[in-house]
Length: 468
Picture (cartoon, rainbow, N blue to C red):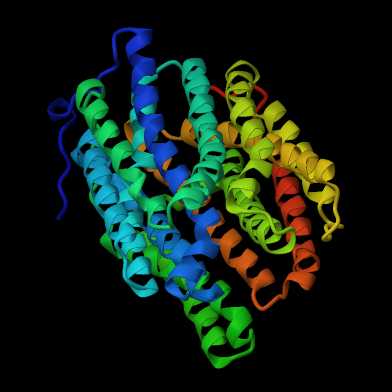
């Protein structure tokens, strides 16, 4: 039988004694989000070069991205629970080490199979970074308004990684080859390890929860099956025995996961949380935003390079308005959330995301550059305004004592959305010749607009003034 540590044996998480130290902790933890975001966007830009270098087709390239995303999404909740139980800084440092070592393995990969395997190990390390760092931030920020601003900065760093990723990737590909896309992680990991050792205090839950191994296995299997079906469906046929069998197995796994979690005394994910409208809508909104984001990133990678003939560097520069808008709007959204609640920034995000996506529904090989830049600017604005209030709403549902789990649930939602977005984008462009690729993206932009409409639901369920 699992035992719990008495409250007296685990003191409350230490709070840095000055605002300067608290914001230093935020800066160090945000560096991990920058690292994870940079890795994702760099790899997206480098997919054509990786395909050429390793002689990989589109399906294999999808798995270069999704092997990382599936493992990351499947292990986030376990990493959050481990951090709450054994120490957030400890798990965070282990994650940095695993991520750095796997990045070196990616850079040295001799084949696409080896690269996919190394990317999966990268996902293991990344699962210990984003949600655990968010838990550290929550523990360091007891005041709800200050925490909302910190989450806004946290979201802004993601936008910054979106800006840095395509430009950095394009510059590396122009001067070196695709392996440099992974070597670049090494100095960032070393810097993060040094700063964590110096600035970040250890924290853990006062009453750590036992690990839910059956729930973890079922959740990982469910996420993996769902993404595999989305990737392989267009190639094997949606009515093929393999795909139908995969759908049936995924459905059975989902039912089994729900049954197991309802009976566990300390479930991996407390399903009762989804009965709270604000929490359920925030998680759904997080999935939708990252479906939209990854559809946009991947569809534009193919469109700008294969249809418009741009280099990787030029393609990255073209999407810069999206990243800049996300970076600028995220801290503003955090401030608005702290003062007025999540509703206003979510409404602004929904309108901007819908408008940007609709501008691209008529995309062709002669679409004016000004229209592209305007659409990217609106989509980035929508993502920037949405990310912080969604995270703040979900995290505010649980006590600080379970910050690791709260961060893991929201991160799982984002990564599941990313996996679905990547799979759908691949399904839309697979087998399309350059002259038909622009038309093939049109359903993707309609889906992106629908994702923006989902934010309206999150806005409707958010209280006018979110507190803690």
